[in-house]
Image (cartoon, rainbow, N blue to C red):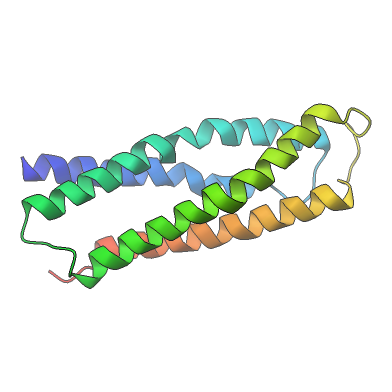
Length: 152
């Protein structure tokens, strides 16, 4: 049973968090408003993977801690959970509001559909979102490192 939960944990982590790495590429610096609108919609589809499977990875991880000799005093467990919580705060508290503003702009302002550059305000929001996404991607890599390099 523990092997099954561990397999579910590993697969849900890989499949769940993998698509979040594409968010950075989707929010590219250059492009038209129409491309940004399309990429934001694609991002909305991709975010379902970390929401569902990422949550499953955390729950199965906690279940593994409860069912095995591991406990929350192990540094790699505490560190990975802490990094996950920090990631969620950044995504929910900072990235989501920025992308929401960008979505509202792409849906409301019809004048700039084919413009080669974004207005300064939207360009700044996009740059902040990209920087935060890159930061969360690095944190996610540290989470994976904690899982793979844990002391046996």
